Length: 231
Image (tube, rainbow, N blue to C red; front, side):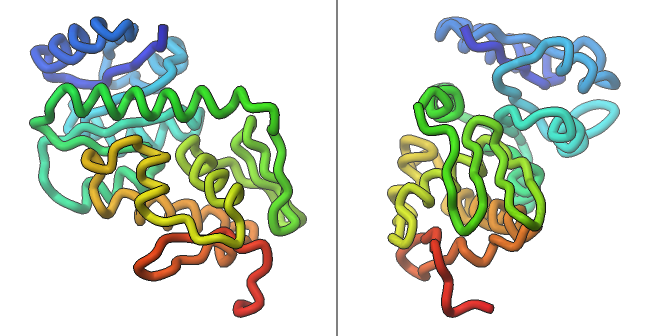
């Protein structure tokens, strides 16, 4: 049974989400003290976090930052606001998905299932290490290491990188990536993939590898093993 931490201060919505997810055998826990979210997160050790943006004390963005200092666990944002910047901000902070309220529960459940299946199934594969552009990519530790240093990626970032490396020097279409990452592109904002890839590229820039994730306009993305057109 997967354990989910639902950080939601609306008691009615919390109960409804908890009851719906319980029918799918998810073990859902809430927050008792919204000034101690990180402490409760650490004590619970959940498999996934669902977090609202508008919360008492501090907003969801703040708690996402704090959680990310401790863990790369999957995070899904909920929001009743319709500002596109909220979705962009959540992805830049390391969220795996963004759902706007009001939402259909089938969409929420589909997204949760896709994330959990992706994150906790691919780590069981026999290949744990991969060499790419002179770097070692550790799928189990979500880390990329080369002579310039080492970075730790989120579950979503490492999965995107893994997908591209498995097809290195070949264009992976946006549609293929979306379907692989989120199972059903009908549930995904067109900007979600772009934000995620840009975030991955920015992290890889820290060790000089961002330039090897190339955008092919109108087609998709490519992980180049060699990039002769860049310095």
